[in-house]
Length: 190
Image (cartoon, rainbow, N blue to C red; front, top):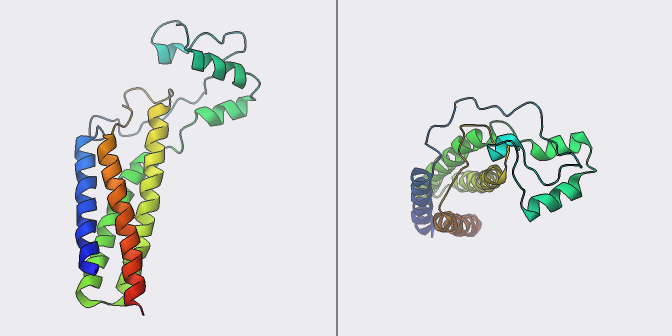
């Protein structure tokens, strides 16, 4: 069963690599993109306009959704408005772009060692790394989804774009890999 998990882990890594290659993450992003220091606040008297930076002109009519949001958010204190408009954490996406694949590759190495020698310690280390990889992947997905929906993205930085089918394939394969790795480590530890 350890070999099946190894092959599935390799398939998941291949799907993840293909997902990275076909995304727009490698395209010209500034090295140190920092968001603007002052948050955007919409005055209660102007619910029908969007900020000039987001619209590209002095003002344009807002959609119904933006108008409802402006009416709902008009009583928010400035600190809450700033927190809503702030990125999840500056540099978080860049850290996750490195950490998720790195943990997966290191975990794959430990699982290969576990497959070869059936040492329980290697299996549990690999399982811990696949657990961390799953958590990092979910965090990365959440940060990218939030960045894609954000209207306050730094200029010049494109919103991350992934193919939905590939994300589902990678996530499904990772879920099965996680479950089978746990099952294999439990079975072989007894």
